[in-house]
Image (cartoon, rainbow, N blue to C red; front, side, top):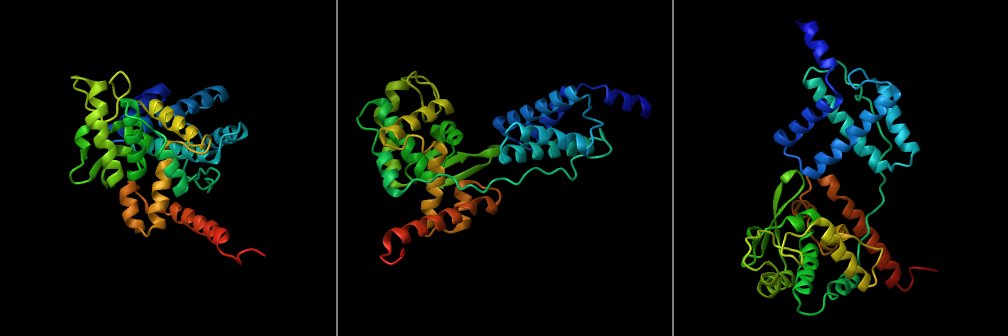
Length: 309
């Protein structure tokens, strides 16, 4: 009986093992669609490599998986990409081990190059002011764009969080917003006065003209009145960045980095910032302390009369 079960496991297609693993991630750990798709892509890439090299997922050794990562590194994959793929492989094989599909975990000592500590791009206060002043006029699209930029900077939203916002997620009277982050984790974030004013103008004078009587739940919509996509949001941010003279210097995520850095520079507590950003680990938030230090250094050398010889 045990021999026949082992044989059945050995003959299961690699794709079936991947689907079982992804199902566990989705239903038991609640990971987002974007994360699941990234894991699926990584594992199918592994499957293609195993097939080319004549290896098998269930009998693969540490050297096989290390070879997979080495090939990717030789093709120019960044340290961050290699870290993500190594983490995916470790998670996948831990799942197989728990299920009894494999006896030995070949990823126990699997390592990838350390993730680069390159600091993210952050806008200055003047650059933010310039960006936020670019949507001029009273057309529905202008009111929407102004509300998007103000809200993303005011609340440190990811692009997916901004496009996923629904009307029920906003309490403008209390100045609060509910954001759904990675892994469907929800958090409450305060909304500043300028952002509230911009969102009110969009809700009262812009959104009704695009949505009409349609029961559209999303806060931000496109010109057809349907929920705005991340690609649509990216184009909006890039268009106004170009107008503000910031072309090539920023993306939607730059507003999130800027939000965090400006709060810390203004005296915000690191733990409070962690809550507002929705970081599971405070170590992720600590990168912004380095950004603040860099900003202070720049201010010092620009302002102090005897800072340079």
